[in-house]
Image (cartoon, rainbow, N blue to C red):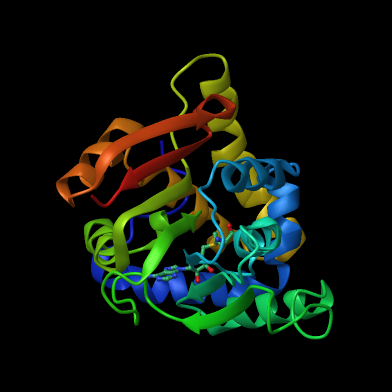
Length: 262
Ligand code: SAM
């Protein structure tokens, strides 16, 4: 069936993605709550709960947008740093995104939430850094990162394989990648319900609430075209990740994929 949009050629994808997030940035957080009926908060809580943590680690959140995942990671690592082995340990959390409009909203949110100065001790508390970066060409040194996350971001990247290669390059040996992404529902009746909701309801809500049907049509299309769970595991292995596994959440509406650089 046609849902009123055509597929986007690969070469145009990067600029299209830029335009989409440029235009949704101000309404991004509200729309997230609305479209996922608040579920994205639980998915992110669970995702961060499952991540590795140790005092003094360097965490990179790619396609970090307005900071939802990094803020959770930061809180977790500050606690881990404090409870650490008594020695001074100061973790680093780096939020990176290709789109400065998203990062700007993130910086403002961090300030409002008291995650930046004042409110914490800059000498001992883990800091949050904002870096504009393309997932396919990260401005970080080889083997400099302990843990890499990308949440609802990988499907927006033009070349998934190149982004994964970059992730592996910047990770230290033993480092971990965790991907949170919309995935594929195979079981009925959830499958039909979900298809109806995403193809019919989401673009209409985008139209009504954000006056932006096109961006939300892109959102739905990018989810449909994203590799299925097992396929993404294969791509991760092809890019050299070890001990790759995945976990479906909410029947596969989203999935978490993990892998290690050994
Ligand atoms: N991780 C955040 C979250 O979970 O709320 C934001 C997710 S948002 C759906 C996707 C983000 O991916 C946008 O902020 C967009 O700018 C970013 N993005 C798209 N293509 C990218 C790329 N090639 N490199 C880095 N970020 C990218």
